[in-house]
Image (cartoon, rainbow, N blue to C red):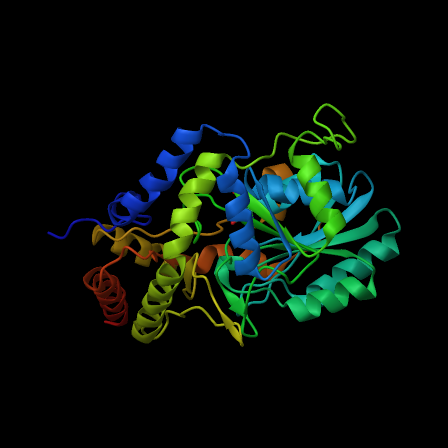
Amino acid sequence: MNDPIAFLDLPRQQARLKDSIRRRVDAVFDHCRFVLGPEVEELEHRLALYGGAKHAIGVSSGTDALLMVLMAEEIGPGDAVFLPAFTYTATAEVVLLLGATPVFVDVDPATFQISISSLSARIAAVIEAEELEPRAIIGVDLFGQPAPWDELRAMAKLHDLVLIADCAQSFGGSYHGHKLGHEAIATTLSFFPSKPLGGYGDGGAILTDDDERAALYRSLRTHGEGKTRYEVERIGINGRLDTIQAAVLLAKLDAFDDELTRRADIADAYDAAMPDGVQSPVRVPNSESAWAIYAILLRDRHERDSLQVFLKNAGIPTAVYYPKPLHHQPAYAEHHDGASLPVSEGLGERVLALPIHPELTDQEVKRVTDAVVQWAEQQAS
Ligand SMILES: *Cc1c(COP(=O)(O)O)cnc(C)c1O
């Protein structure tokens, strides 16, 4: 029958880009500056331009980017950091690593982005309880679409909170006609291989317009070094981006816009084909998604599981992001105040991510849509 489709197709990506990637990596082997070599600086320059930010700092991962941004704000014990319950664990774990408390916020049932009304209620509850000091909001561009940044900025201003943008899934996407990358005081990126701009290993970046913060991030990623190498001004981490990763990413960046166009075309084809009872992603107005994830919504867990099995049997892989909201995860439950976040709690039973990556052929896209339609017909009869 048909060969299985890949959820992420790195071999095909290699075949398409390996010449340009190898040229870049060979140059690193020639100069041997494996730590903070010239490719890191070149990539930082291009990322800043791309995201419309004054500075970009290459770091070891998207998680370390978030960690260093919080460290720079001196977030610690007694501080509350507001973030969505429906996101990847990395957004929240860094808060706990610093001894601060993540305060989970519910998400919008249509777009899955952080809910402003829930955020407002959660901030009010923390203020009233007088146990934690509200310090920061981490907005997450879930699945590649933008969070409601205008409202988040207003909320941060109203309560004097630091606003941080977790753009791990959305770099390449745009909002109100400009690329994402400067919606908040600091923006964090991830180059994990499955992200829209994926490297061949771990990597990340921090974007900011603020000169002082940029200098702090550079210090933090090199063990808190001061003006000279062995002057330790603050506690930092080993949080640098490898030169080899930067070289891979420079080659990937050349192909990035074409890949984004391909992802968007696949999303359009999926949207157009989804039958009744299978909801395609609700688009955030005035935005273009980076389409890290294309998540459809089924009526209930039974139908979601049934479609997932049906597709698996047709050689089509799917994934569930995220089966359990963070406040229900064992590691976070004891840090949660018990508030119910009903949208986040329900979504995990009904979402299903279809393969969306630039290597999919038109024929494969049609195989996916045909299978979903066939499943729906079978359900109806
Ligand atoms: C992937 C991801 C991260 C973490 O990035 P890494 O580079 O894997 O550390 C953080 N936040 C979100 C929303 C992510 O999807």
